[in-house]
Each structure stands twice: as structure tokens, then as C-alpha cells.
Length: 172
Image 1 (cartoon, rainbow, N blue to C red):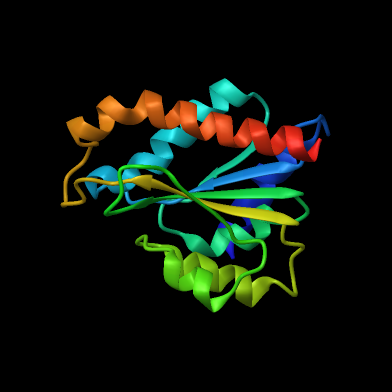
Image 2: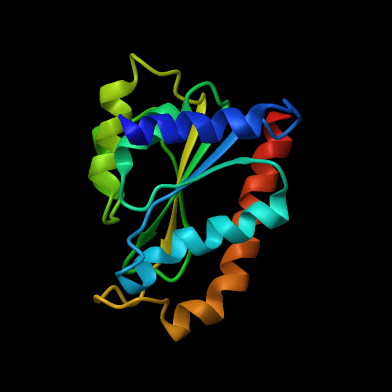
């Protein structure tokens, strides 16, 4: 319950202006004690400065805050590290299907997808909902990102910004 209050406060605080970016919510998942699993948190912090006033939630591994955070936004983006890929994975999960659930291979996928499905009746989930998987190379119990991922952060940030800017333009 406490996490839902945090998510709602975050959304309310960033939506007070109701400007053109009000309709976008970006959530990041990851464990800061598991190396590259914390990459989404690093990226969402960098995106805040680059994209301006968008609603963001750095949820760590607390997936229960997601439905309340996404509530009443037009577009939702969920960022979570994935293994076994060099590229950013982008999936349109606006219509949650069993096939899509099976194709998302990240450490928090089942839990945040289940949260959305369970609370779909209670909260207004965005019309457009995307999963963005970012590469994860090292997820041992260590604090800090791997050097390989640190080198790729600017590139990943640019790719994410481009995806987000295209989506904003298409839905403006």
C-alpha cells in the first residue's frame, strides 16, 4: 500500500503542469545490488534530464507500485534489464497476451505483468504500453554496473530517447 502512495504522489507531482509530456509515464525496474540489473535506474535518471518533465518511477524490484503509477497516462514505458541480447528489445504490450508474456525474459517480467493484469480493472492502464529491455551482462551480487555496460550507456540512452521521442510525436 505504501508503494502505491509513492507512485500516486510521483504521478501527481509531475502532472501538475499538464503540459505536452503529461501523458507519458516511464517506470524502471532493477536491483541495485545485482550489477547490471540496476541499469534501468541509471538510464531513467539520465532520461529525466534529457526528456524534461515526464513522469518517472524508479521502482527497484517493487512491482506493486506499477499499476497506480501508470494510472491515467496515455503512454506507459517499462524498462527492465534482459540477458542474452546486445540490442534494446521493444515490445508493444498494450494487449497483454500469453505469447507476449513468454517472450519477455527479464528478472521482473512475470511480477510486473501480473500486477498490470491483476489491477487492470481498478486502474486505467495506458492505451499504449511498451516494454523496453536493455542489455544486461553481469548480474552477480555486486554494486555498480559492468564496464561493458557503462561503455554502452550513452548509446542505450540515445536509442531509448529516440524510441520515446518517436512515440511522443506519434501520439501528440
